[in-house]
Image (tube, protein in one colour):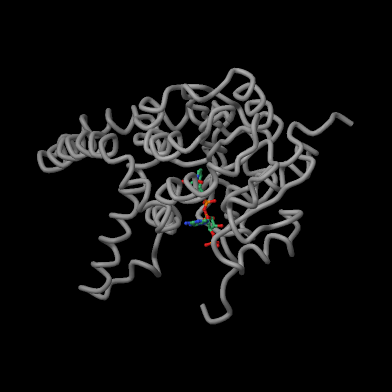
Amino acid sequence: MTPPIYDRVALIGLGLIASSMAHAMKQFGLAGEIVGYAKTEETRRTAVEIGICDRVFATAGEAVQGADLVVLAVPVGAMAEIAADIGPHLSQGACVTDVGSVKQAVIEAVAPHIPEGVAFVPAHPLAGTEHSGPRSGFATLFQNRWCLLTPTEKSTPDATTRLRRLWEAMGSNVDEMDAPHHDLVLAVVSHTPHLIAYTMVGVADHLRRVSNSEVIKYSASGFRDFTRIAASDPTMWRDVFLTNKEATLDILGRFTEELFTLQRAIRMGDGDELHAYFTRTRAIRRSIIEAGQDTAAPDFGRAVPAKKPSE
Ligand code: NAP
């Protein structure tokens, strides 16, 4: 059997992403030992109980001592405080990474606390579900998903290569880019779509209250898919919008312009414009399937839940 990539991995934050990493690292033998820290006693206890951590600590500082990889897997808004806590306790030669959904703000929050002799290699796995907490993780979350590394001046080539090996061993495809580019790309493919989903579900909720219509009962695939995205963790997404402000506002501005174009086409009865637009967007869906990032199965391959006896 090949030796583990890291002797001791310290997971700071023990939610969906950290627990999925723990399951994958254990399944593929990638870490000699996994230790952890989370804010609440309950999460720390659960982490040991379900076996994602061999040991947990009451402070982040204690958890990182002796670790050769430290993974910051807390909400983006908590990164600065955690980095300040762990800075003095990091071991020489260690690598600190994070999994935050925004990169520039995390680098600004974390880099000042990284001492000489410690590498910092930011990362972002483009994988997730709408569930949170230590029990929501699973080993295959990162399979065939992208993980983007955004190296900084505190990243050494050795530390970056080793971290890349870890993500590849957990099933990810790995790419490198600079942090501003990452934040713009993510504003297009993830952050703004989430905001739109939150808004659409908000509109439907408002409508339901106002007209007592049957939005929930008859929710078909379009609305239902929005509700899945809009069920994502409120803390995480609040922090994403507060920290990727400029790129999100840029993309939202472009979105609004496109929306006005379609609104005008509908008002003017311009079927050709609508048809051409939807033909272009359909081709994008096809290319996502061809790239292996979703399935072509109808309704995204989900089964319809069994009927409730009362229905
Ligand atoms: P999660 O399931 O909500 O878990 C968050 C963890 O962070 C919990 O263990 C929580 O501890 C801990 N935590 C929160 N505030 C803390 C603080 N101030 N100090 C110490 N621990 C704290 O979150 P997640 O979905 O794994 O997300 C973690 C990170 O990954 C975020 O930065 C997010 O942007 C990024 N990310 C998420 C996704 C996704 O789809 N979910 C995808 C890619 C990247 P308690 O349980 O004790 O409160």
